[in-house]
Length: 235
View 1 (cartoon, rainbow, N blue to C red):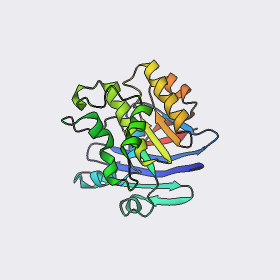
View 2 (view 1 turned 90 degrees about the horizontal axis):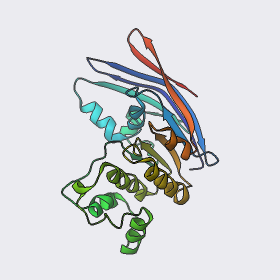
View 3 (view 1 turned 120 degrees about the horizontal axis):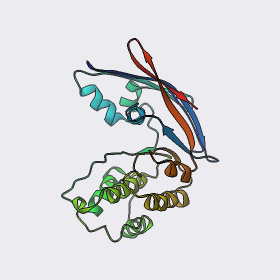
């Protein structure tokens, strides 16, 4: 993907206790400046913006009986509602490294790392897997049980796993936060050196992560409305 023009016209999540209403989030990404950092107060809705791009999370929201959900994106000129996403009308090759990843803690790092290959058509050889393990410097962890890893080590596996499908755009949501600055810098360098054809959207509470990624910044601001809270982007 050479460029991404992203617009979130609206995202509304309505529960009995709270209305989250996000709108007017717009930004552009290209291979000259391939990373954007979404910043804003904790709890303002940054992760909800990302989740609204994926059918898995939209399905979960719709299964909540006390919750009403709707959204409308514009991606590279194509308008995309929550219904379109659920029906796979447009299925962009996006990867999402979540802040709280799911792992099977009873299995090894290697089993968790390569589990998504069951959904990937491309055949991976033992040599391919070993090269991938070496690239992310996981040789010393690969045979450990997942529950033995620290928070930072788990996030390394989480980030690595996203790249199995060779995504065009990767969303990294606070995944460097469980690493010290030196380790985060090391893995940002690995991504920049080996996956520089990707576009990146990141969140991080640490300024140094954003600076080292050389990210443009989109700040999500807040203003009150009668029927809830309206969040608008400030570029």
